[in-house]
Each structure stands twice: as C-alpha cells, then as structure tokens.
Length: 267
Image 1 (cartoon, helix red, strand yellow):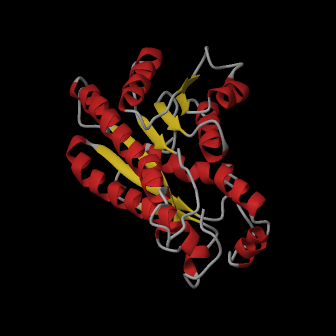
Image 2 (image 1 turned 45 degrees about the vertical axis):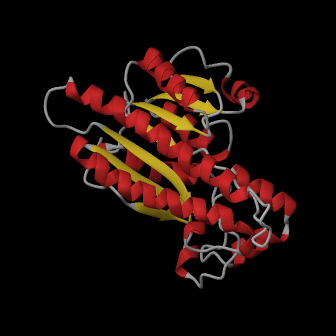
Image 3 (image 1 turned 180 degrees about the vertical axis):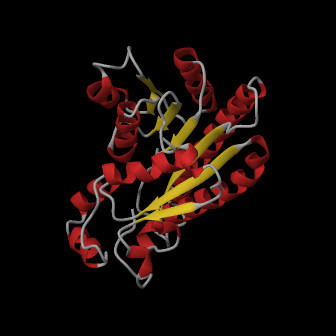
C-alpha cells in the first residue's frame, strides 16, 4: 500500500501524552517500529510499560533540550531497530507570554523547547538517514521528517506571543530543512493543527473553560478533533504515498484558519 509504514522505524517525541502518544500507538499498531521519546518517564511507563521491552515499540526518557540526550536517543533507536526511517517531532510546550513584561522568559523557553529541540534532533536523525542510504542500492527515499506545528503561527492572541513565534519558526525551519535535505532524498514536512484536543489544549481549557465554546464557535466543523484524527495526516507524510511532497505545511483544523484571523485560542 502506498500509505503503508509497515517495517519502517520511527522516532516519535512527546509520546507520553496527547497527539504524540496517539501517533506512536497508531504507528506501532500499523506495523512500524516505534521509539517513543518523552521527558516524563513515569507517564511513558504508565502508557507503554507493558510492551516497552519487546516487539515493535520501545520508549526513551530524557530531556531533549540537551544535545547529549538527543545523541543517546538516536543511539538507543539504532540499537533497538538498526535504522531510522521516520522522525515525528511532536514534543511541544504551550505557555502564556506577558508581552509587556521584559522579565518574561517564555519566548526563550518556547523557542528552545518547540523549535531548537526539533531542529537539533532533525539534524542528528538526518545524518543517520544519509548514512543508511549510502549503503543501499537504488535511489529510493532515505527518510521522512514531520514537525507538528500550530495555526498559531498565523493566527494568534496576545497571550500566545511566544507560542506563535516558536510555531512560525518551526514552519520556516521545515521549509529550509526541506531544501537542504532534498538532495539526500529526505523529505521534511509539517502538520499545523488548531482544533485538536492535544494535551496542551486540554490543560489550557482546564484553566480557561470559556475557550472550548470559543473554539467550537470559531471552527466551521463546530467541534474539537481527537488526537487520533491527526494521525492519518502524519502517516500520509511519513509514507511513500507522499513521496513528492516536501516543504509543505498541511493544515488540519476543521476549517478554522479559513475564518477571520482574530479567532479562538490556536493550539
């Protein structure tokens, strides 16, 4: 099947919760080998502990803001599955920014967590993909990298200043890396979502219950999607069915970005 990922090896970050967890579980169910990475070791063990040392799913706990941790993750994946074919950068953090407070450090924190971690891991994984492809016959695909972004890159609110800046940076990184890696047959794409019940949105709605009604009102499909509804878009970009797609940012938001940009919170 053109959209099959059976036998492929994927690293999925942010895999202890929400969208990352949905991607990791679904990829494993559909025949991929999956290394689930997250900082929250306790939650990884709770979600994956019964299968984490056998079969086609493993987990790795560590702070991916640290370069050594990234190198260890790549090494652990190779030790477990020999190769890396897919990287899904699903690890994201959402926090509010006080735009008028010069002491606020949320922009720096979000750039480090949401942009720089994805960039550094993509660089490490791309080097491995290139090394693998050098030993293969033919000129088939060498790998696929998918970044999870947000429509906050284009539609924002004052309190989401830092998150929006980091999301916009991630999308430009996606396009730039796509150009840099195209000669090596590695594709780089992103999925920007809004009306999806991610772990961050669930937490935000807990703090701001009125946001749920705002989001549903401002979404043409009048609902918030489940994390599993995002997985098929990610799988498409990971599979050979999207073999001529690179540098693209696919929007999955129930139509929210088609409306007036002054909208409900974009997560």
